[in-house]
Length: 254
Image (tube, rainbow, N blue to C red):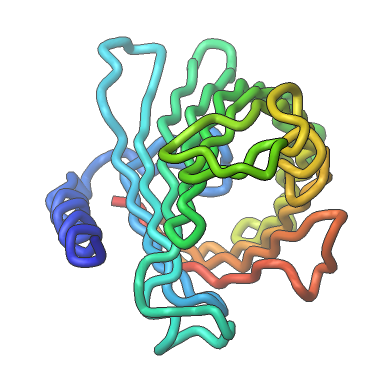
């Protein structure tokens, strides 16, 4: 499994290298921007790799992008969490589209945890609102479903194979605040709640609870027109900022 994932990363990386560097430069501070990209981040769980490929939607008024993220590589070597190992611990895939005529985006988001053999798939709509000075908001609403292997049900019995224990809804927003021409802040709050499924899932399926208010805070600095460095902090109401996930990531636009 690990060798196959590394091979997939190599193939995806090679496709980014041959991308056209003469393409129009997109605003990397815009959450709805679509462009071919590569990112490398370091965390307490290891190294993260992000690869994004824009694609032709067949329409002059829409743009699309696929983004793959592989997280926790070489965690035992470069991370410092006790549970870290050198295998990829999780991955994320996003299929993203935006309508240029109305500033509306859509996102299919799939997350999978290899250690727990569980994940979630969701679909959301995002709307860009008019900027108010240096501040711009992008409200989001979506629904999703959790899935996992050998899930324990309400009767404390394990269901063999993969199953879908429940569904969830989410409401939130992306926000961007320009500080200077090269520095901006993002704060992306998200409220998630279980909607249906087993009693166990409805009571504990969202961060160990029936619902969770999640926070994401980002500080970004644009190094050059095609590159930036970003600091991410992610935590929820059920844990502290300090115990949340933190990472520093370098991004390059092809």
